[in-house]
Length: 92
Image (cartoon, rainbow, N blue to C red; front, side, top):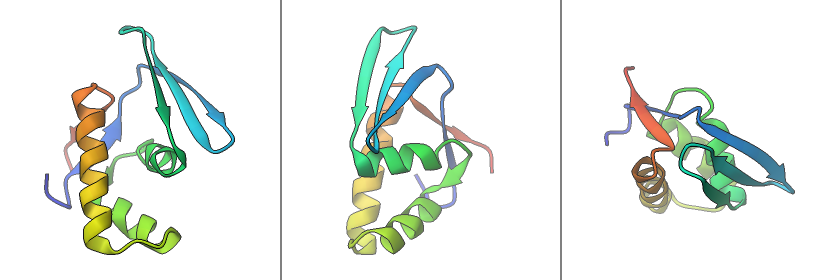
């Protein structure tokens, strides 16, 4: 995935915020997901189409993390979310 492609979360989830973390239920699959504070921040960003570069810019401003590490970690999370059918790529 390049840094300018846009990603957005899928709509098929019910979610609740529990002290900064997200618990989400995918109704069709009957799967429950837990997102820690950082993953929950990313999840909130994914409410609207956003690029990987934009996500990383925000995270490096808010957290003590360097850009290459941030990019690797966000790519890993996005890949996992995509494998579960929770996010999708959209046209820019």
